[in-house]
Image (cartoon, rainbow, N blue to C red; front, top):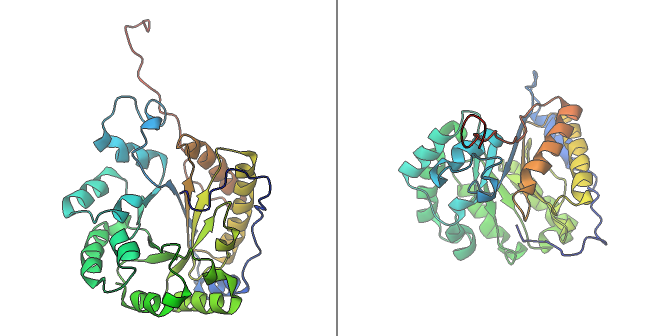
Length: 306
């Protein structure tokens, strides 16, 4: 995720803003009489990470096997491949068969809908997309709509119409990137209220160069966070601590699901960050998600290892 990436972090204030006043109300309203434990889903944007061969993947495996081994390391994926094409039924079936029952795919809506047509007259594309996403069955998490940076509040009626017509079978989160969605607090609160009324989750993006896209406003009892790290810089760990503390507070208030997707420029850093973050979450919330681990590689050669 290059959006908002900066080469120099010296002047970035990485502190998380305080919760929006409406967040506590959203969680309180969604809290059932007998709350179930919150579910934590952590993942990366892709699974075809050749850099993990010989460490988090067994050495020598072929690309068709990558997803199977990825699902042993993470319990979710920010599925970017669907941004470029709608998968056919056979592809979706293979994805489902490669992962376990608790694994969640969070497919990104096709760019043909979000960027090319910009939500205008896209029904003919939404129908096959819904069919493909729904075919993930119990492995479907929250799909997400990433709007282009130039898609601003002047297109709010189009966005509202799209969300009203969006199929209920596919849970949807929305990432707003244009700065004017956030610069006017009255407009922002109106948009957030619309998301809440339509049961759409606001994506929270933690990125160095755009601290405005971090509103800390939950519109559903689901937290969907896209985290852009910086190569295990010390600030990555400080931010992991802050997120673990904030998410622990939301868990105490009754959040149902947390999706936390890790973007690192070097994919070898993502499992290391995940190990740290998941341990902090375990200590603060008691939620146990097995962290990524180095897979023992077979010894080459004879009995004596040569």
